[in-house]
Image (cartoon, rainbow, N blue to C red; front, side, top):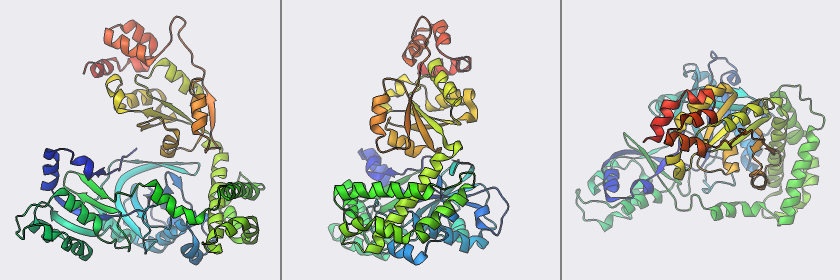
Length: 517
């Protein structure tokens, strides 16, 4: 999975040497937005006048189908929605602009930012529903059960302008271009009136000479002080150098209290909220009672869309009357639309969970050396589930006593091929791992010592079940990665060979080399 995270400049300037290196570079600086990150994937099919034959829209690997939004009033979306129905506007844009994309390269993933009305963002821009093209990558993809797994190879911006023109999607505005080290260089690099106005409030601190040096904190304050092009406070900026990407973000950008404050007007008492979500689940179940799961997924979602957004208006108003009353500071039509969004999204997850191809399992472990015990658990799981997602936990403290991620991946792939998907995470937090999985998950594999811990973590994931694994052990000794590592380090190859599979043993020289470093 491609890591498209950008390093915070504060973490890149922790020593004087690193700070001077940071200040000496030339940058193109663009505004950074607090939006929803989405994928647009151009498949490998020839151009078709029906845009859905060429484009896939996805959020966190889950496909957003055109049919989900066909019957929703677009004016209502813009005026009332704080949820999933806003994605209709992306499909509208793709459909309207599709004729311009005939020359768009096949097998390309485009990373975009969608500025929507969302209660989990920190910034509340005056202007909403804009799209911004961030980057792209050549990418093949696999689509199964309403999910897409792309295989991007890079995070590139080289052809951003060309692709922006083809897609009719704007690029983040450039606010600065040049060096940031001196007063003269900084003033010459400013490309935005907003940034210039912010600079004017700080420049009095420096001697009025082009060679005067500017300190890091002032640079940061200027880049975080200008108003967003969308109106309101900017989230921050991205600084692109020839060899690196950095970001400045507001101090409150990841503040839970700020985000919670945005949700408060939409919430009633804890009792009201508990009843609200109980009603959401009840109505979602009711709308699916007579669903025919032999139908294509798109047809099921279109039927659901009609039930929720067209024929269900009066019923939803009646069921959620208490919620509407409890959130009196919010217009009733907004509360009703939020209920519709929540019901639709909940019911969609229920549909996806019932698809046979989505009955996948997750197996989490460190896999410091993949042993026979690890392999046996995966083999037994593949007899029951269509696919297993293997999460390799790579904490920094474990690096010295573990194979590299590359070698772990090579070993597991040599054994299981495409029957498994390998992801990695820095901790064993199940919620984070589940959100990272490109496959939809229904079952979590756990040893007897982890069942209670896993079930505690999954209290909010009612569609997931923890399944106990039965470890097969050697007759004379327990199989463990610790014993395998000790045997490698001591040169006891007979024991090591007995602890791993033949395909793992084929990597013996690579394993020995890594533990001799």
